[in-house]
Length: 461
Image 1 (cartoon, rainbow, N blue to C red):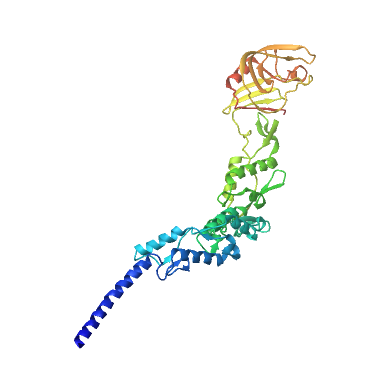
Image 2 (tube, one colour):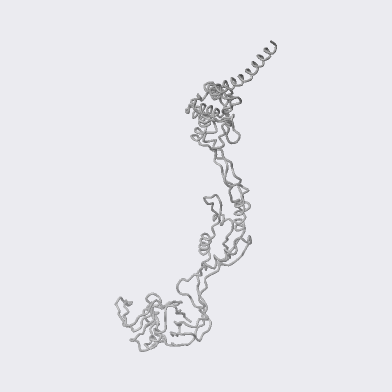
């Protein structure tokens, strides 16, 4: 009897040990298909052992009762309740899919993050954000890059520090917040969409290099002493206007375009009228010859620009005279035509050899046609032509010449077959209308050798 009882007890124990785990497994399997497992957290809310319906209600209640924190640039923060935005959990399908995944995958995560769970009253979001002071235009500022500014006291470029911004677009912010609320987020950081950071800081190496180079230019001074004793200066006060900022925020100083402009201004001040030059007159030696036409000393722009470029960047001070264009050396020339109005004589020298030495007749002094002294060049030359004009009494003249060589408007050299004598004082009362009358042979030789590059020097000794 005892053995039978023991046997039945053992059978019962064995049955319980086998059956209970099976039942538990069956219950867990059935239960697990409808409930989230232990330690399940959805969007930060504990949903352990909850059905989709229960989890939905708990999540919706949680987000509506939660304090929503809004974070902006410059450490500005605002808080409000989620309920203000009428949040409703409308995406139960996402919860069902999460539950199914737990049932199908043993390795599925217990911490679940779902997006687009809730519906949001978008108009309330816009109304709320519009009321915040951070969105008022007067409170917004764009970030500003560090920049170079000219300092009048130091006469140099100094770095102005960058400025951080707080600019955020209202429409973008609304969409950003709506998306965050749909995910059930309770901390919304708007700095992610805020225009805060400048692109160039005061520590920027390139900006510092530009500052150093530009200041080496500005620290250079070039003072010109002009012909009349006045000065004209190139310094920082002039060159600061040569500095420009590119679209990339960096700086340059434009020497290539501004140096020529500076030289133009220098030339206006430095240009002066030349009155006479030295000349080695035949049988007279060194004399002063007037230029006749208005002739100015002008700047050699190419050489002046080259010198300025070499000086700029040295941070030195220079005192110089302008580099003028070189004038022809009329004293040491060896090919020229010479006319002495007083001696009434014409000479021509080619490579130092005299090929013409002839008397002439110039413009009538008594008739008011005196030939003007000066330094001229041939305009053109032609043969077998007629010279026409008017006499002092108004009558017209027309004279044939074999060789015509104008050099000063209508004044030029030509042969004069109507004259039998030349030189002396004929020009005083019976001179020409301003031209230089020559004997035929002399005019012919002159014509054959003269060109537009040979100076014609007229003077009264």
